[in-house]
Length: 299
Image (cartoon, rainbow, N blue to C red):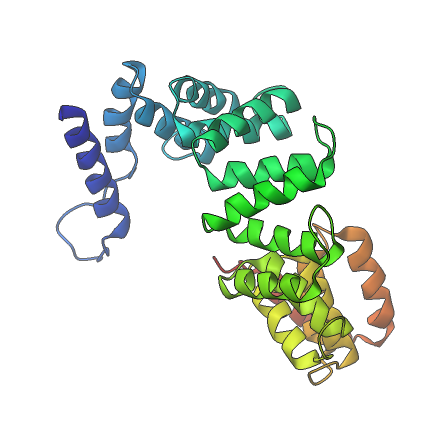
């Protein structure tokens, strides 16, 4: 009961500091560090063995919330919580091992911790396990197992797993080939604002595969996805603006989206740039660069 009360106070303090508006003439000075009070509560609890606090402290080291970003320390606190059966910590530690963040890259450890979290019903872990079986990462490739895991994650509301399952049906990998079912799964995931699903569905409309070709619909879907920072959609959106497909031709807009995509997809973005770079005026280039410099993806 006491620990619950302390954690509640920490959350209230954090919410009050972060969420409250500030006014220049307010007589109450604003806190310098909104996470300081939270740390006062979390650190003792974590050191005393509280799994929730250990996971929270790992998150704070991971995100740099009131502490310097420190992946090894984050991994250690995630490990302590994970060993106590904390589902979110198990998933977090698995992602660290998968990419070698704060710990040596080790797919066998990643697989084990994903499995531990999946056994507790974590939809992200189920989806990531499915990807391991789909790609044969640390395990024999098994399309049927991958599809089953994606289905389990999708049943729990994971939009990315829903999109992945759509691809499985589209290509007939691990499940019977069913283009109509694939489209429906893409639509369901895209309706939930999953950027990769919006790209997948937009691509079908752009190519006219299994659905009537519809540039306007493709443009809309690519734009929604691109606004979230999805580079593949940014590139195809740029190509449509450069060619005037489904919209008025606009080279400034095309260049802007390719500038955003280039850090993630340099080779393909530069290939698309060459299609119309010679037509781009200095002023159009400048406007696109200024806009791109201040752009932030939509959450």
